[in-house]
Structures are given as C-alpha cells and as structure tokens.
Length: 479
Image 1: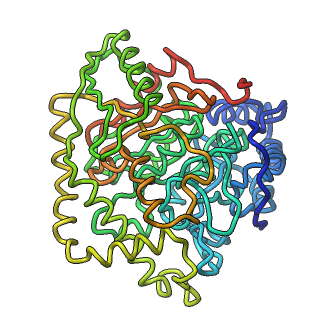
Image 2 (image 1 turned 90 degrees about the vertical axis):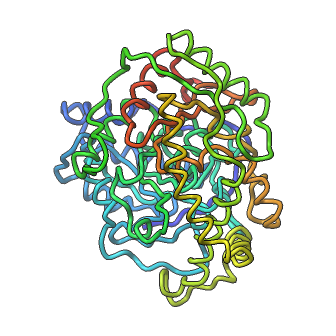
C-alpha cells in the first residue's frame, strides 16, 4: 500500500494512453478483449499500474495504491460484465484492508475489516481495484484541493480543478489510467468532476444502488453511489450490472440500455438557477447549442423555470452544514478516538459553525427539502427531461476553490459554481452530465439532463443519441 503525494507540474495536458494491453478502449471494449483471450487480466492490470505510475506525479489522484494485491487478484478468475477491468474506489467507502481517510488529516484511519455494502455491489460487476482515489475533506467541496497538501490536477490542463468530490476518480478515468471508477454524489460529486474532466457522470435515483453505511443514517438521503466513465455504453452496462446485484422493487427496472430510443421527448430548458449568480456566457452558449441540437434531432424544446424557489438554496446550505456538524461533533465515535476537529479544513469548520447558528431552523429545513421530491416530480408531468448547465460557470483554475481561503469567500464561490446539481440530491431524481462542448481554454464543458424519479433509462437513451450525434472530444486526440 503506497500513499501518493506529489508536486504540481505546469499547465500542460497529461494523459496515459499508449499502445499497451489497455489501448484506448472503454471498459466494455476492454472486457471484451479480456474475454476473447486477446489479453489477460494480469497484462491489463500491469498496464494500468504502469499508467498510474507514469501520470501519478502530475495528477496526484491516488490516495492509496494497492498494486500488490491487484496483481495477486489478477491471477484469479473474475466474473461479471467488466471481469478483470481495472478501477479505483473513492476513499470515502470501506475497502477491506485499506484505510478510509475521507480526504482528511484530522484522524488516522485504520484498515477496514470488510468491504462496505456498496463496494460489494461495485465489485460484483467484475472490476479489479488498484486502490483508492482522492477526494476533498469529507467530500464537502467542489474541487479536490487541500489545506496543506497538493491538489488533484485536471488531466486536460494541470492548472485547473478536476472538480469534486470524486475528483481523483475522474482524473484517473479521463487520463486513461482506468476506464471506469467509483464515484458518489451528495450535491453533484459524480456530475461535477465528470463535467470538469470530460466524462459521463450519471447520478442514479435515490435507492437505485445499495446505500453505504453512512448514507443510511441521514435524515434525507442525498448521497447516491455510482461511477464515472468515458462512454455512455459503459455507464449503461454498469447500471445494468449493478441492478443484477440489487434491484430496488420501489423503482422501475432500468435493464440494459444499448442505444437511442425513437421516442421524441419534451425537453424543458433551464439556463439560470435560483441562486443570485447568472450563468456565465460560455456556459449559456453551450446549453443553447445543446438545445438546438435536440430540436434538430426532432425533440420538442422550450424554456422552463426551475421547479424550486430561492429558499431551496438556504435550505440545502443549512443541510450541508448539518453534515459537517455531525462529523465535527461525533468524529471521535464515527472515525476514531484521535479525531481532532481543530485539524479539519476551513470549509469543514465553517460549515459546522454556520449550522450551529441556524440549528433552530432544522425542522423547517428538513420539511422543505423533503417536499422537493413532490415539487421535482411535478415538472415531469409536462416534460420528459430537463436540460440545464451542469455548473454555472466554466471549470476554475486550482486555487479558486482552495480551502486555504476564508470560509465566507469559499462558500460564496461554491454556491455560485454548484448552482444546478444539488436539486437532484434533495429530490432524489436521476441526472446525467455529458461533455457536449469545450471551453475557450480547451477544457470540457458539460450539459446536464434530469428525469423523473426512476427514469434513468430515458437519460441513457438520450445520452446514446447525443453521443452518436456529436461524439465528444477525446483527451488523447487533443492538442
């Protein structure tokens, strides 16, 4: 087990794609190559480790490498749709034998005794883990940056953020180290790094995947477990494989989605959020371009309002603070007796302090957030899909969302940046981020699609159609 901490490089593009056992295949293609006997699982694992080591100093995306165990596992038979495909697991869920550090230096995690329930589901698809990926402290930020350690870098341009909180996973998938990686999403943490790194990021409906232990304890279960990938077919196959391990009878089955549907959809378009910040010009232009494409493809497209009012922003922020308050107040019991809340970063401490000032609002906040399920569902009586930006402005450079700045300054920036994604977490509705365009600086620029509760199938069918209509730019082809 190796812990990575590496110096930053310049602002170049970095990727690990090369002529090896992995090639430039997605997880589906690589699994087929392994199944055919063209390459062995060990050859694929060795290639992925070599790639991780080659870009590790530039990206700083691995929290813990578990290469020796991966090589041992590579010599054993694997079953599942992605049998033998290398992956990483985000460092906020338990993997037997590895610590779960949650991106924090406020305690020293001990190796987990067993895999968590969700990790069991994730590994049931046949993937082989190389280790654990970095996240910002407790997943609270939208950029994978730290108080006293090197940030995770975006492989499209090392000067920029890879998003968060699944930033380490996204950087490793985008750079070609692995074709699929675990991610989870409590306010956009699958979709935000997918947007920043040019990936497909689907946040499933509430209850679609097995909840992790901490997820189950929340008064409103905002966290969804999933994966980030480079292709729609990988995300569709991952969802179908995860569903074979566990299917929630309260939700309609997704089953395997293999391409677009001929059904033309009613698409509502939202360009500005209910926050005070206006969506920036590049992002606005990209959403309008996606809307025009959908209309050209025969879908009915019209502008519509967000299905919540401005009180949602305050409610979600207070709930965000509540999560930090719980960790700060109960860290010794939850994480270990050495937990020191004074060693947490400015964002964690500031969120907890903000909640203490608003603690009496908790009943009202929980009531209104629970009502978003109904408010969200109502808009899908008129529309099949809602199109919006994934983020309110283009990906920022590292430092813009650094936890070294004051809480007040950072918090205002985070609210302005993550203006669209939290609604799906509070309401429980599914959403997908797709890398439809690029910024003037050459970074990916995503569009965000939401559907009614349990309707991941419509999102995947539409994603297939858009991927075929305008295949997104590949990092290995970028200049």
